[in-house]
Image (cartoon, rainbow, N blue to C red):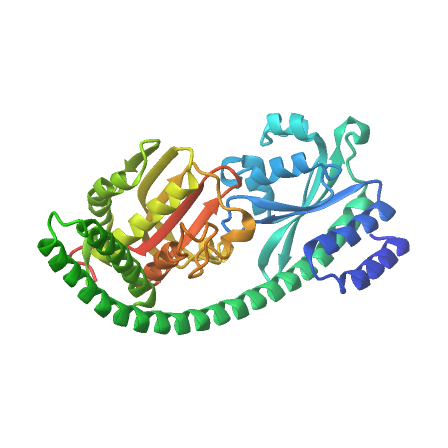
Length: 423
């Protein structure tokens, strides 16, 4: 049972949390309440990242050391039994000394210094929003199991935090939806404009390229021949840009047929190798099972080339580009924790590079048309926009996984074609 003093502390905390608008503000208020009502000095919460593979830590977990924070957030949930236990727990639990816990990675425990852990799942309206944790670090704080009063107080604080975090998440989702609707409207307008310009420009290019071909025949050996060669080369580059614009604007009709993705990648790889410098190795990993989709071959090849060019530009000093293909089935449970997903049977094509990675501030913008982090002379800002557009045209989607300076993986999800004889 909570003491009257603890009840007052909870009421005061509830009022202060009502004004919080982000997770950092929430944990700043919570840390004060925990310090005033218990012997513990640290409180934090772990929230899964959008890809579900890692988690974001908010609050004071080890004195605010950036190196510790970076190491914590680099851990992969799927590869750590202790982290899996933390993010999937359905009831509170206490670990008196993490050095004696069989699930804990003792290398991490030694490096980071955690001792006692009190974890409470954060749930709001049956939705898991994360885990609230109070604990100790290092020999100075030592092993400190909670008293019954402290344990009850921490559980009540976690309940308050769950409500506030759920509210903040709902506000963020609403804002994201509003941005998505605005982006869709802008893309539709841009697509119509780009499509109209591309068709007109393409008609002009046909004339330019045709006349350039005739002029080359007439000027063979003439001093002006080299000038016409430059004109034709520029027209060829303009034609390639027009094809990108048409793909982005959906101005080209799709010719969807059953395609073995592995076969398409194998055929396109010969061309991709010519695009890559000798300092970049190309590897193609075949799938373990059939990978057939209903797709337009030309559009799929364009996507593969765009991903290869993007990877090439991310590895100016060389590296490795790997294309992997696999089948995945996304169910409702997966989509519940990965909002970007969609229920279904998919073939996933991953383009994985060892380049410089995509900074967090750019990940939400890299698929925007005409957005590029490259110099104006090197990028049109259409390469990844075309990848995203083609994925949507085929009822799929594309995701990026990346860490700073640790490479990137672009995952293209395409619905798997039904097997012959099945609806």
